[in-house]
Image (cartoon, rainbow, N blue to C red; front, side, top):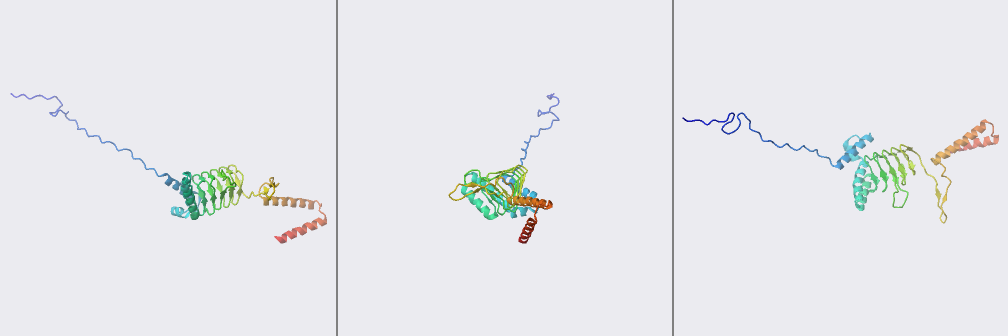
Length: 272
């Protein structure tokens, strides 16, 4: 009688466990998708465009900002020329800045250091010198000059802190420092340091020295005057008028002095 070889319980002839599922091969997981980073220069251009929309209510569209704002063009070209200047390619840097000046009417020396979110509104006639340093979030209007007062090869142009606003036609001259968030009014002339969050208006022109050929410079005695010269003159005239009015009220003026005063007032009135 044929006898059947007994198999172990729970196994088949193939030697596999009965009821067990075949193992599926493991598929290697895909590496996490890395987000592409924008080039740095594209991010800076986007930042400049956003700055214009924030500070100029006349900006209405992206195309208008990209094609019709010379301040933006001047800043973008300056970044290129500044990199050339730092790489000691001085002539190409100066040539590019000259072309930018011809295109925009804004002259920025390639050696000038300019921070982020720098905005030049209108821009025609703006001049920024070689050793000028400009912080972040600075705004300049047309006709602004950041100039020097020395012929030596040293720091001779101003330094503007963060958030400074310089009005149209203003001039900041010499190696002065304008503090953070200071404001300089239109047409002002700044020749001294400005503290933070201060507002500067008016002219500061004074005669400091008289140069006569063949003689040593003579220092004028005007250093004690403060503010605009015209304002000081008006203050002196007002003080004199108040003194005369008080004397008239007190009856101190003689008839002859009153007559001369009236004639001088009428003569000045005819000349106005």
